[in-house]
Image (cartoon, rainbow, N blue to C red):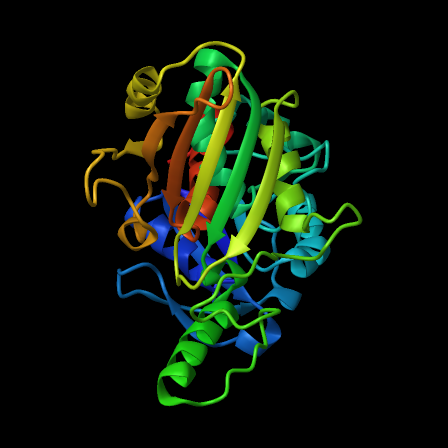
Length: 341
């Protein structure tokens, strides 16, 4: 016996990826519903590469009763309106938006990092999926924190345009083409033109000069991993279609050599260590696309601080940063609580 699963926002980048991951991982589904906005009602989306087409149902009229799990990939607006309705009907919501992440009654889960926290889902019947840049970061940090206790993290991100949705990817493509043919370039989705450029600005600015994306990385890392960790982030949009990269500098309470760190990362769940210290002996965003792993390269000791390690982290933001993590949460939920399939 399997689950009845609804994918909300099924026509978007993350919603489609959720369908793909559910099919790839053979998640035990008796039934899958594609749920979307009224304008997408009746359109069809494929369930992974199975050839099975699902007709989108209107979220405004969707009956949540009898559905086990809803994977929400529709943004904070729909999550605010419809997630509580689904939860009240007994359907457990796994939400990809930022809306519920810092709610004390909603667990924020990365299964490789804090699986026990999922037990708190019963407070609201809602589980939050972290920000894409946070998810890959904490997967890499967790085993190192367990070994030597992290005091401080300085991270600079190189985030792909798919993090801004289909419109972001389309803008990169259109602007790149325009530059080659000599057409004018006009930013629409981003604050400055993104083609052949980098933009040190993701989400809105806060009073202290940081952006909301940077704030998310700080507070989410504390909630998922350890509230004592000090973290500062600079989040940058780069002209890449898929795949987020991060340069991470870590200061530990206890001594940890680069060699020991690599040994730990080599065995860590969800991590793929590729660090050959030669030309091409590291992972870039192009190589991570479609893969479930969080890749770590360029591991080395930082001589400017006591007990410092620097590393490079790359992951498919549509996968581990969103769709895959949500499905992994559903799998964890099934193992610990729902006991079906």
